Image (spheres, rainbow, N blue to C red):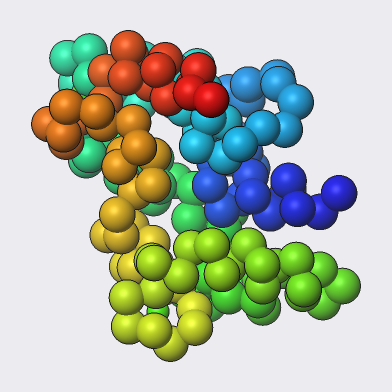
Amino acid sequence: MFRPIITALLLSAGACPAFAQAQEPAQEPAKHLARLLLVNFDRIDANTDGIISRGEYQNVQIVRWPQIDLNGDGFLSEDDFPRFAAHRVRTQLAKITYLDTDSDGRISQGEFLNGPPLLFQRADRNGDDALTRSELEAARNQD
Ligand SMILES: [Ca+2]
Ligand SMILES: [Ca+2]
Ligand SMILES: [Ca+2]
C-alpha cells in the first residue's frame, strides 16, 4: 500500500497542491507523470509556446522538492520516510540511484534538479529537449 505513495512522491507531482491531480488509479510512474503534465500543461508552459521546455519542467521539479525532502535537510534519503516503510523505501531509492551522481547514498536537491529527468528521456522522442502535447500523449499511452 505504501509503495504507490512513495512512487508518487518520487516521480510525480502527486503530493503537490500547486498542480491539479489526475484522478486515475495507480499506474506506471512515467505514465502517471505524463498524465499530470498533460492535465497541467497550460500552467507549466509558462511562455505559452505550446511546448514544455527543460527549464519549464525543472520549475515543476523545484515546486515538487519540498514534498520530496520531507524533513527539509536538503537531501532525499531514507530519513524522509517513516521507519516502518524502510525496506520499501530502499527498493524505491535503488531505482533512482542514477540521480546520486556523487554516490553518497542520498540525493541532494542539486542532484535531483540537475539529474537526467526520467520522463524527458522517455518522452522526448525527437530529442529536441522539449515536450509537446503529442509526445506526452504518446508517453501516457505507452505500453
Ligand atoms: Ca514553453
Ligand atoms: Ca531529506
Ligand atoms: Ca548524492
